Image 1 (cartoon, rainbow, N blue to C red):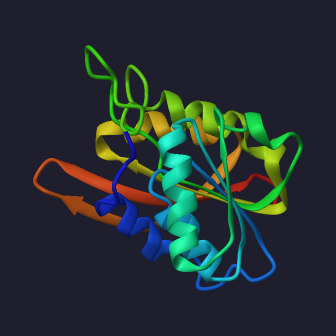
Image 2 (cartoon, helix red, strand yellow):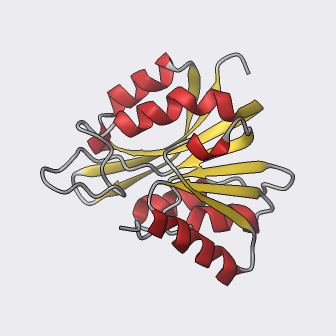
Length: 182
């Protein structure tokens, strides 16, 4: 099922740099393609990856409709990328804890909700340029202290770019991650 843009997508879009001119951008988990299209509009050379073939098709259609170029690939995380490097890896991951029964891949971040983020960051440095950055969305339901531990364990420094309350029980966060030593 393709993830339709919601508050988290709109917050991430607001936190994007004003220009990606001359930058290679990877959107991991592209869903509807809203972020990939915006990055392309801002001048980025964009590659989008999603495990859901319907999301890949939706992203291709969104790029075609917007008259921008986005290369959309089906695959699990970095699998279709070989050794390609990017200036930005942008991800609005599935970050909610698994629901019993048939999981929705667009929402299911793993048993506790942070497992997808753990896998994403474990492979991120291999696909970042020397001054590359990761833009990441997560929720207060994702156990922010656990996400902070994952960020630290993978040797990234983080900066909060945006935050938004959603209802009474959830906060959304967008962080920029820079590999330590940069």
